Amino acid sequence: MGAITKRVSESGEITYRARIRLRGLPLVSATFTSKSKAKEWMQLTEAAIREGRYFKHAESKKHTLNDLVDRYIRHVLPTKPKSLVKQTAQLLWWKAQIGKHLLSDVTPALIVEYRDKLSQGITARDSKRAPATVVRYLAALSHAFSTAVKEWGWLDDSPMRKVTRPKEPRGRIRFLNDNERKFLLEACQKSDHAHLYTIVVLALSTGMRQGEIMHLTWDDVDFATNRIVLHDTKNGESRVLPLVGHARELLVQLSKLRRLDTRLLFPGKNTKKPLDLRYAWEQAIKIAGIEDFRFHDLRHSAASYLAMNKATLGEIAHVLGHKTLQMVKRYAHHSEAHTTKVVTQMNSNIFTDILDDQKVINIV
Image 1 (cartoon, rainbow, N blue to C red):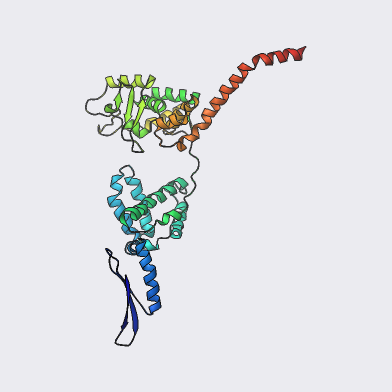
Image 2: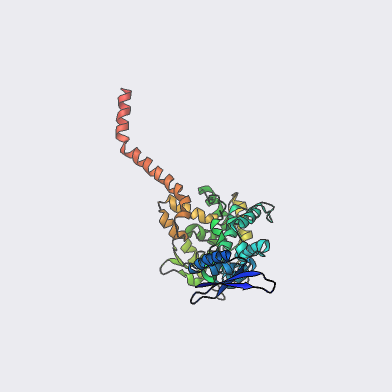
């Protein structure tokens, strides 16, 4: 219910105090110089309260973006250990740029202004930030705002909903052709690095990420069932991969020589951490004469080989650990190329007789 009280000061100034009290909610009041303004405020505010909008708007005027970022980093990011370092840096960038603004003043237009500033910024490599990088910065801020809306009640809606994210280029696809694969494996076999060859074979045969391979423990490898179980994956879900063929042979050999002071398959000098692969990998790529190829492209190679060997997109997604088919659609053209070869061979076989007869007729 609402009420308006007329007040007259000692100097004769007249004001009107509007008060709204709804059961179970705090008292809300405001003072105006005219009764009509007081009535208008009461109507709009009572409607906003009943719809659950008023107190969130009031909260957005109490907190700054600094408050939002600090609380998010303190309470939410620790639950996302894999994203902790990168997202902390991304959120601190936003804090440094617009942190002093009240949340009520952080509009889509303001975020767009600094989105564009971020896009034009020069990185440590003396180049503009890639669209994918800008998208990650926006995603970090977006989740922080969503948390403030859904869990903290600081906002009625997120301003990020009206901010357009840069279009990311189509995912890179670089895979080893037959000659490159041969030269790379030969270079890895000749490497002074004791485990480089085994690691590269694992990557090509299973599609595992470098981090997944390097953090493998013997508890993850089951020779009885011929599988590897990944518990700590990028998407947070466990993944089971077949361990077969040459990769299995290499791990069986490795198991006979494994160290007893660590559970890691590929431990470094500090047995609690995996070994450093970077220098040996770069040398092998150089010796093999392969250009524009990263370790992660071994994962693309594995996916491409699966597609060329008739694996469905769903099967490829399962092996790579993707939750949707969107990420593996890039490999569709490999399976289409294989299908074209199959259909061509089929046409050649079924029409051979009639084509031969036609040639005879033409000769006669």
